[in-house]
Image 1: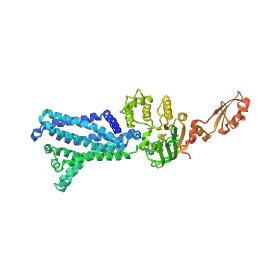
Image 2 (image 1 turned 120 degrees about the horizontal axis):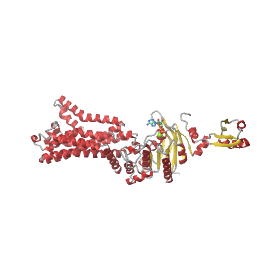
Image 3 (image 1 turned 30 degrees about the horizontal axis):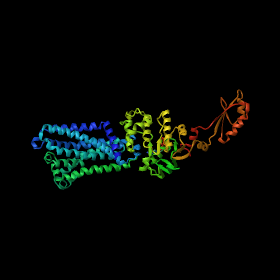
Length: 273
Length: 298
Ligand SMILES: Nc1ncnc2c1ncn2[C@@H]1O[C@H](COP(=O)(O)OP(=O)(O)OP(=O)(O)O)[C@@H](O)[C@H]1O
Ligand SMILES: [Mg+2]
């Protein structure tokens, strides 16, 4: 445990020096505030408080932004050490490879949590400042925060796995961007195309909800939207959200980080420095 | 004697190159062993195998009585890689504190460790701003953490200035006196010869010989060179008396086998008046080394 903490501490310091903390926090705060400002106009019409509406738009934002920030922080995790030549030495220390990855994960999760808290927090302050009823949306905001951290953990671990597979930072960066495109953008587009082509058949009613849960980003969206019914109507996939119990989306959100962590450790074990 | 490290019939090949071939070697407690050999002889490969960083094909390796790379071995072994590298954004102190924590040692020891390698003043600066020799010293400092029982040092003095080299070997002497075993590789023959107990020469992945310099000198049996200086105007007579020698401007050079040295010397002194002086030039360290270390031959 102390070795994991030692690694986490040093990695956090490196993230701080590399400006990752600044970049992640700035990105989350700027985008959150922009959304809070943009979403403030029509809130009364839906009958929901302003914070709940903000949470709905923050959910859509986080689906893109949190995995991206997580992958950007993690793709260098193993490949960077291989390229810098720092890996052989650390591997001769009495520390296991799983402990090394856990240490990095802890540090990067810390950075991500700070960024998410700062971003969502500033959006919440903006909402509460203009709408006294907005405090009703606090549970939804809290749920959004911890699920965003889970989503980030999944993509951090996926980033380590890619980093271990490619051994070179440039290759790992390419793989990370590719993974983001496929899992976040193309996956949903593909599902959408299939649903349109299927026209309400077996695929749409039986398979489609499960395919949504299978992807951690969609599970994140489902869980947050399904949990706050008022805003589900405001989002596009309200119908699908209704078809799946939130528990299954939550299971997906918990299983993904664990599975990705396991995969990254197994891949890291195969890396010869 | 208890052995800190034993290799027997160790063989390792990369895809197409045979890096190590049937290497048998052991290092005892408190012993300082220098690994010599040409570029690509297999020194770094041997060290990485000892540390469990890379697998080997056949043979047996025991490190402190355990499997290389096992928890027991890693707990007692310190390593200094060739071209040691650190994260440039960390300061020397932060980096050493990190390594101390990984070994379960108190982080407050970091300033002491840096002071031992002469980096007391630079500890608060980022490693990215260090010179090559300063980075090398950070590498040495981390190898001293936690009283290791075996130190594996790959070209530890590369990049160090002459004074730091001497300080480094003094550090090694202290460690060895405490019972630590040291396996180091080097291309600097003179310093290694004076400051280690045994030389091991690898050539093309094979261990060609090992022993103290005296042992190697005897094994090599290289000829001794004699330089005989004639008295004023006696050059021609001297050359006549020593027909096997070569005359140059200052005198006659001749080579003789080590066991014929005394006989030859007494023959020359018997020449009496025509000889002014004799210099005996033993084979140099480089001669002995290149006798054993043949890159392509055999
Ligand atoms: N990762 C690798 N893949 C393939 N061949 C390798 C690899 N590492 C080393 N070799 C080969 O193994 C042989 C031994 O290399 P090694 O690095 O052990 O030499 P060395 O004695 O340390 O040389 P130097 O004095 O230059 O440091 C060389 O022929 C080298 O080309
Ligand atoms: Mg080498």
